[in-house]
Image: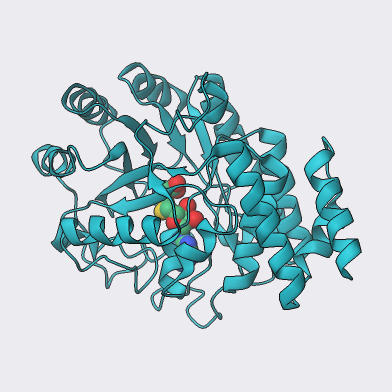
Length: 356
Ligand code: SAH
């Protein structure tokens, strides 16, 4: 694609209600420096216009690494016997919430493997306690559960739910998730929306066998679902999984998916993911300059953070919480941005401009 073709395609995907898969596939194949710069700068402008310059910081607590599933890419898969499993108790979780009080962390994300022993009432009580203790939004990222659990947690005060769709190619989805169907994943996402959650999806870039067409489908799927948030990160091979020998996802391809998602979806929250920061020391800075607007800080207590090993080499996992917070602030400031003061709710729910 020459420069004018790239500009024309970027304009179309920004303006059209339903962008064409062909335009997205062509843009995903751009690899020369000038073309990439054009894509990233366009995404950066769209980000500034639609979500502003402030960066909401989400504090994530990984409260259990037990999992009943066997996702072929994930180090928490139930067949990984080499992993020491843990569950955090309520005190440790509330201490972690307390530790970031006044630090600009206005969302608490509770994430875990799909822990077969999860007690839905325990989680509901915990949500209530966090909401009473901190002036923060609560996001759940705990996998697929029956609708009545989602309802209970929503009534307890949970604001958002993150359930990445991982890949919108149904046959690839089914190869990677034994016994699961893509249609079930989407049914859960739709149910969560219907229950009033702000919903996040997202995909993994660089899965074996994944094509540019699949990545274009990911972007269009998230547009169609009108997600409030999209977590987009590179695949990182984990030695104790079926995909141990597969090469990691590409930094540039992941940044392109982030950028094009921003241009197509516009007013969506896009995190500069920890996975991007794990494959390149400046991965998160690059994402914040290519369409991303949100960042997560891991606030899982130190001995446990390193055991939440979805992939190896997670940046910051071995450090104390205050050092992880300092690193996140440094990233935000180095990109010329500031920490958002609000909760960073779905942009469709913000009456005022997000800058206010
Ligand atoms: N059990 C929850 C949380 C899963 S862990 C759920 O199912 O939603 C959070 C995310 O980590 C996953 O959605 C997946 O996208 C990502 N992940 C897991 N293993 C990965 C790997 N090896 N490389 C990159 N991302 C991975």
